Length: 290
Image (tube, rainbow, N blue to C red; front, side, top):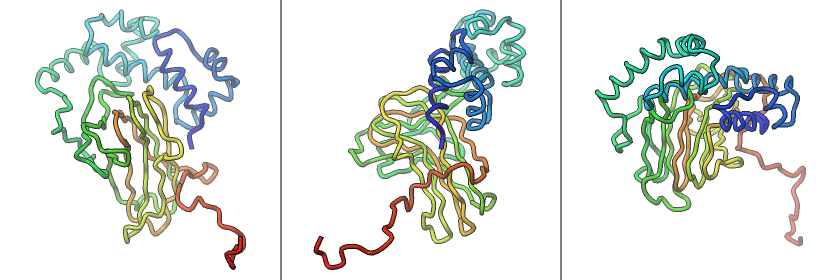
């Protein structure tokens, strides 16, 4: 399971993304040594703190290029790059083209097709489900995203009640992960949510749920900036399918980006929520006298 330390690091980076702050300031704020922070962050997210900061700054740059009139030089300096050349080199490495060409191409595409949450959005691979799917909708957001150029968004458009929920999800065969322990991770951002979180489920051939976690014991509530969340489950040999997504209960809006699946070893604790109750060693109160 992701640690509070990693989430604290990401929260700090998101709050100070446009400032010239780095590892020393993060270590002081979080209260751990630089070595410990660096090792833990890379272990849990797969990237270093500096790589994460760079990816997020470049994502913001991509948004500025499309939705602002600031010059490339102004954008480079505002995102703490030392020169336009250094910014262009980093941007091209991540997005496959220099920022000037990206700006022209993306603005031309935006003029040809409007990316709006109009209730008719189809997202390749993803479906809308839940207890009350008619009260929710999904879409693609090209103005708010964690990395790349777009994110998926799930939002309430009606009152589903206290127990109603919607989910943006997909399913796939479990074959490649059978007998392994997997970690599903993603980045989420929320706005005025009653309750939400990522979820993952492993089913057998009969459709029975054999592994499950929906972050119910660590739900996201209210408004929060981008942060990293993960779920760790075993995929037993009898597994047939894996289902996952983001869940929203009640009102609000949640953005999701950067879903990732990877195999982990048994040193990474599982977050499976099934069978958590501890059984007593012996039967008790058999005569109903207690």
